[in-house]
Structure formats: structure tokens, C-alpha cells
Image (cartoon, rainbow over all chains, first blue to last red; front, side, top):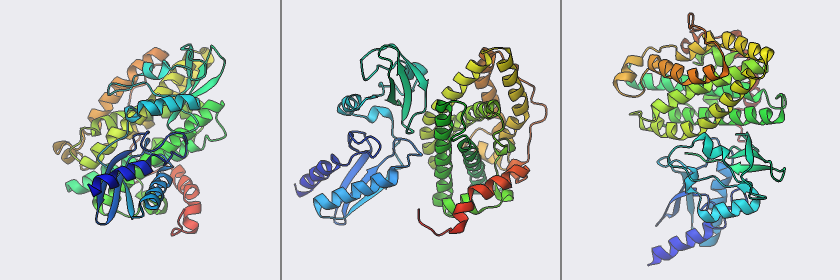
Length: 163
Length: 251
């Protein structure tokens, strides 16, 4: 019972650890947490980066450690999970909603492989139009692509689908 | 050659290719012909250097190799195993674009095959990298087709770029010494098989772009044996300049 309570407290704490590049999403909503265990040494958390070359990984690990140690008053150990790869289907639906509100088009769900169509058919997060085109598959961070909306004349970013 | 050594050589040549092309890509930062290209080459540089780091880390963790940063920044040119293709200066935009197209399709084929490797660490990394590479080939294909169909001068420049790149690109697939062992142990299918698959993958784009694929008559080998162009040592000196000021510094 004690362990279950502690686990819940860890997850509560993780809800408040935000991604440094997309500050409206927590590491849980991004699907970055793969395992949480509590034992006599403390809390052991496994996490995965979205893109292999994500420069924010060390900061995120540090933020997770600090938040959990502060909230639970016990040592926390954060490591990168080498068994699991991140893919964009790991984003929760609440996360996709928040992304849209933040002005970033969420990735469409993929069936194991990302097709070009999945990237091109992107709804504008500002006006909801589907009359958009892909301007560049690279944006301001590794996880974003650049699109343009012909309807409202706005550039917008998309969180890229990744298989 | 022992299997362990053959695997390390495979990883080293892949990682060195990634690191050096990553550095070359980064040389477009601030110089891209349009802002989106500036961002694209800079983003791809970040991806490549990240992939190189992940590969060096496998050498470090699975084979007791040196620290990834030290391995990347403190070796001399003759200890590198990259192909000559990635060493060449960025040149004109069409040269860099054509190199990116040919190189990223080659990488895609390589990681695709490694996603079924019997060596778990590579197999796992390949699963991640091949998804990310989709964006690199998507970018390359789109621009190659767009520029090749944008008028006679543009098409001619792209054809010259392809002619200039092709023998160099053949060097990506330079056979290695321990290859038979790697094939027998299902680590990867070997360079000849990758080369064939690469041709299959680039041909539809080449055709759509209206380009003529040259014959691979004299692939530029030597990089996998530590023989390099004059450009590599210059690149390494620039890339490692700050690191060597204080190799023990924490960043």
C-alpha cells in the first residue's frame, strides 16, 4: 500500500515537469516516461528522448530528479531507457489538445510507418483549415516541421509524426 | 579478424561518416540560399552529430572504448574511417544538396538493414534513427525534384552535381575486412547488398527528376582504411579546436 501511494506521488510530481522546448506539455503527456520503480534506495525513473539528438535530454533528466526529490523527499535516479524508442503515438490526446492551443499542429496518428501524406495533410492550428502546405520538414527544434496555411496566411509549426 | 573487432569497425565507420557530414552540414548555418534551407541543414547537422554520438557511446559502453567526446575530437585523420565523400568541402549548394540526397538514402538503407541486426545495441538504435532519417530523405527528394524541373540551367547544374558526386558516393560502400563475418553472424547484410538496395531506392527519384545516373566505374575507396583527402585533417582541426583547449572541461 505504501508503495502504491509513493508511486502515485511520483506521477503527481512528474505531471509538473514540463518540456523545456514545449512548456505546456509535461514529460508524462509527451510519453517520455517508460518506467517508475520505488525501492529502498529511492525512486528509479526511466525516460526516453523524443529525437535521438535532442539537446534537452540532460536538462529534462535533471528537472525530473529535482522535482521528484523535492516532492517526495527521497533520492531519485533518472536514466535513459535503452529498451524503448519514442514515437509520436506516445503523445496523449490531452497533449495533442494542448499543443493545438499552444499554436503547434499535433502529429496525426500513424500505423507503424510515417507516410509523406501524413506530414503533408496538416490542419492549421490557428483557423482549422486543411488548405495548407509543407514548407520544410525542419523547424525551430528537431521535433517540429514548418507549414503554411493558405486560408489564413499564417506560418505554423507541426510536432512531427515519428515512427 | 574477430567478430567483436569487425562490429567495432562497422560502428566506427558509420559514426565517423555521421560526425563529418554533420560538421559539413553545420557549415551551411547562416549561409543557406533561403532561410528554410539554412534551418534544414542546421537541423540535419544536429541529427547527424547526435547519431554519431549514440554510435560512439555503443563503442564506449559495449566494447570499453574511450569516452565518446574524446574519441570524436582527439583522434588524428588516419584513425578516422569515414569515406572521402563526407570529407569534401560544402562547395556549391547543388553539390551539398546532391551529397545529402545520395548520402541520406545510403544511410536509410544501412539503418533499415540494421533494424534487423543480431547485435542488439545497433538494432535498437537503428529502429530510432531510421524513423528520423525519413525527414532527411523527404527533404532531399523534394529539393532534387524541384530544382531538376525548374529549367534547363538548374537541371544542368544538378546533373553536373550528380556526375561529380557519384564515384565519391560509391565510396560509402567500400567493402571492409571483416565483412564476411558480419554477414554470417547476421549483424548486417554487407556493403554490396546495401549498394544494390541504395540503387533501387534512388532510381525512382533520379528518374522523376529527369537525371541520368552515371555508371559506377571508379568508386573512391580508401577512407575505410584510414587514407583520407587533405580536407579531413583541416576539418578535424577546426572541429576540435575548442575541445582541445581543455579536454577535461565539463560543458
